[in-house]
Amino acid sequence: MPWPELRPSAPVLLVVTAFSRHASALAWAEHRLEEHFGPIGLISPDFPFTQTRYYEPEMGPGLVKRLFAFERLVPAESLAAIKRATLEMEKELAFQGSYAERRPLNLDPGLLSLGKFQLATTKDQAHRIYLGQGIFAEVTLRFRAGAFHPWEWTYPSYRQPGLLDFLRVARDYYRQRLGG
View 1 (cartoon, helix red, strand yellow):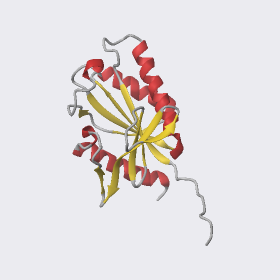
View 2: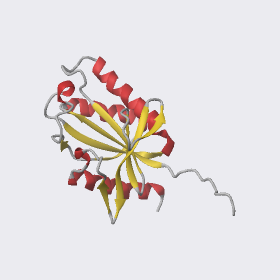
View 3: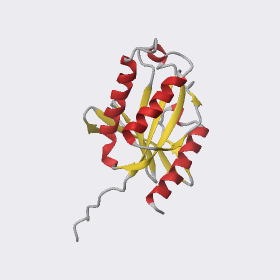
View 4: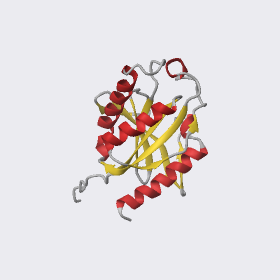
């Protein structure tokens, strides 16, 4: 029996979810993310973030969520480093002192491939894999039958039909970026 052939993973589409109650913080995030990760290829409409009040104590009410998909594909193994970079960006904006909230912006990077959308997190759970550097990965959505579908653990805000539609469009964009 031959040994399995090890092949590197195809590059993946970086999608960063930003949420805040401040339009100016979302605009800052767009600019800062582009500086760090290159041109943005797709931007979602804003989605109301009303599925939980978990973030209100540190971010305030009236949060909206916006997704950015980047032109440049990234290595599949880069998720932990990307999450650490986005955490630093969050701190950078918070320490400017321009907002009353302790955390005016949350950035959640994810990687989209043809079969799944995965998010990075700093919180461990039974269904998450440790990547190193204090970062875990979660397969948040799976793609089958022409659409993204949630798992039992998928955050409610990633179950919204409009957000799932945007990620389907991002998947088509990713397929084009792969060259086929």
